[in-house]
Length: 69
Image (cartoon, rainbow, N blue to C red):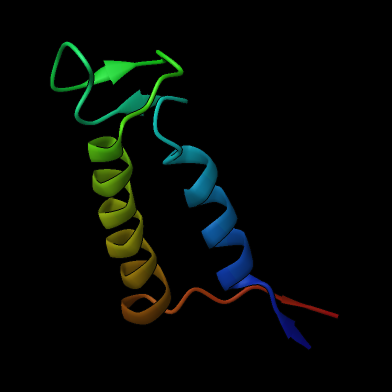
């Protein structure tokens, strides 16, 4: 059996936390901007830290598993 939990969680979080797609922290003009499709180095760093924190919570603390086969 293959454990698809980490793959699914990482893919969904990567898509949702892409800077500028849904939201961007910090924005160019405000703290939070929604759907502007622009990014900066600071927002990449902030979104990377958020991604690392959430992936750690989901995979280590909660241990999400999705088995196939």
